[in-house]
Image (cartoon, rainbow, N blue to C red; front, top):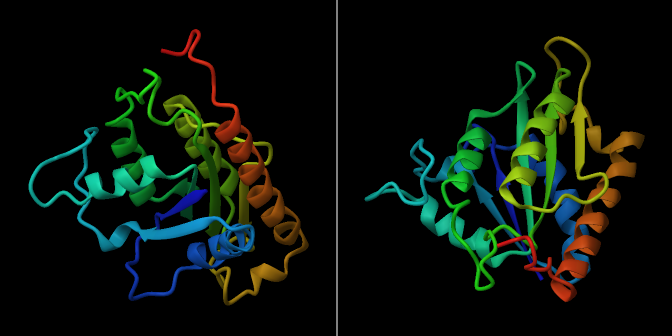
Length: 203
């Protein structure tokens, strides 16, 4: 089974990402279970704005889209800014939408039988608001969401240390939700791999 993680941090890979640190905990479980994992830091690529599958010369999205189409598990990660998901992850969802009309070999949407989940970090509240927006978008596009499809950490109100500096990994809440997200995505992904969504009413 393959998994791909889209990190919507506004910083490229030359910078440390708190969102990446939380997602690593989920992906470590997957790797231990034999899942092939690939991480994509969206800020490393040229991804123009638009609701399209390919925006022409210089557009790096088609290559990313191809990796998503190959994967059974798709994890999106976002920092929380002003109570919202990042502009980078918003852009990614818009580009995913650009291929929503494409179909698989059975005539279903190409995101059918793919399982999605979300991780979010921030030093203030707003994670649930950001996650619910992402979860709805992914579900509407055809992804399947398992029980407890998210894990997040936020610090106290106002400026303060972020996930890594605050040692958010030690949070009892985070420790409980990392395995729920990882194993529920993996379990539902295994079910769909063996028992795909029927075509009746879905083409």
